Length: 55
Image 1 (cartoon, helix red, strand yellow):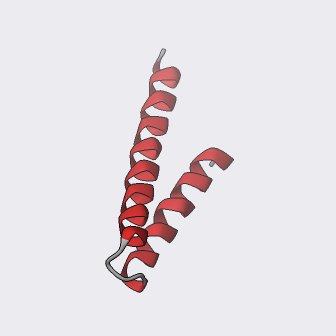
Image 2 (spheres, one colour):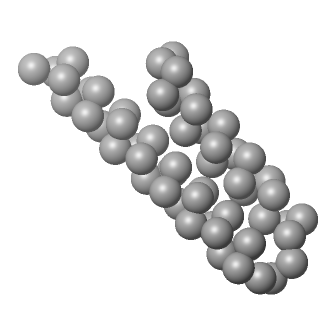
Image 3 (spheres, helix red, strand yellow):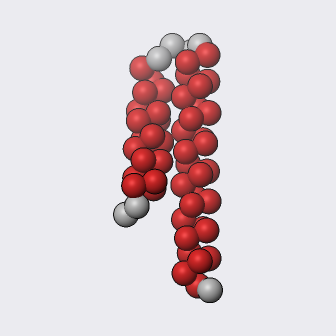
């Protein structure tokens, strides 16, 4: 596993775990955004890597 991918997965997992702990404020919205961003960037990272390997 690459450090970039590991970092993204840890960020996504941590933000998802923290969502129930914070009140319904801007903090929870921020965590949702971080989780979504890290999830999407992880998927894009994997797709780009697979595309490079197939060429």
